[in-house]
Length: 119
Length: 110
Image: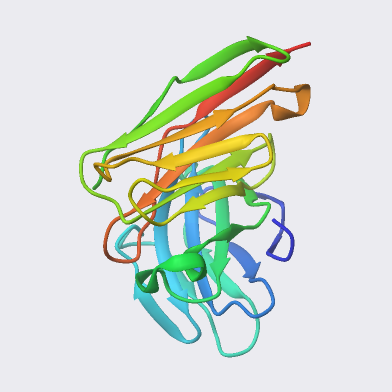
């Protein structure tokens, strides 16, 4: 976990509000992945980004969810008009390079997560 | 999406016992990763496997990449209380996604 930072650790929103989750990857890592975890379930892939590019967003809902990884600053996962079903833990992971290359550069290191509660 | 079946779902063992858990997929994977997650924390990478048949150790942990490339095993020897947590397998075929298993919850009784 060391090095991948996420904030806030806990976020409470009312239905209809926006949630913004931030992720700073490990030093030297330029690839970021977002996952969602419901209680007592595994992690579900949402989106994979490189700097300024969305590489794979096949796991992300088409509406209300968006992600970015700007040239400067952290990656942001944004959820607009949150609903109760969005309540979950959201984890960010980073790797030195993309997963298609194989080998040790494939390894993903996770942050501590943001627990989103929608009231 | 890919189906990853992880078993057992939960285990209760005595301190000092060995533990085995496994993961099977419906299709061939090129990479297997094993993670441990403590409550309220993110998963921590334990072992990474890249070749069919590969056997890799990390202290008391040993993991194997199945020959068929559709399964992987994790063994923990001489369990201790701090081994408590949820263990996840994750596999990747082609493309960018890692698919995670549903987890094995391990409880170690002192």
